[in-house]
Length: 112
Length: 114
Image 1 (tube, rainbow over the protein chains, first blue to last red):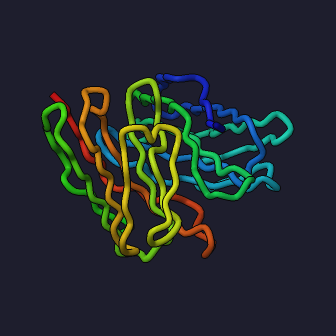
Image 2: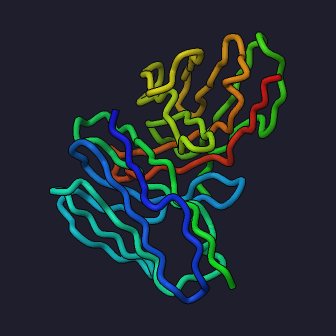
């Protein structure tokens, strides 16, 4: 089955630095989404990029999508302590059953 | 937050007993999902539903069954709980047909099978 796979798994940075996470997937997709999970909570949707888009911005978030390489990256600029969380990518396969497949997640720790 | 609630939030049960987890939504979204989250595995899809009485298996469906008798409720049943089903279970909803492909998640149910 198709799954997103993030890289790296864990990241520790200083407040103000940028954080970059990568995600790869295996099959054609309709869209790719990024979610954040704070400890002990449910996942929260951050941003969606469609298969015909290459880059998207939302506040301090920047997402890129390279469908030829089947990969995506999430950049968080000027990180804050509140950005400490796990980040997951999820793909919606192009074969149309609207099943979201999640990766294993990236743990990001932002040190104040 | 989207109107989605899971119950119970925490449960401890014994091996071999049946367990039912409930997901309730007030958003009238057609799609509902059950995931489990385990360290090192991320989120894995157990079952999902694309309408009342319409359900399908996910990647880790063995040992689980679901029912959706009305739009707002999606039940996950462990027929005979095993220790390997100790996990955090998340329900999610989405409405891709109405331009809402993103999923909204409940707060999770922590299940411990002893």
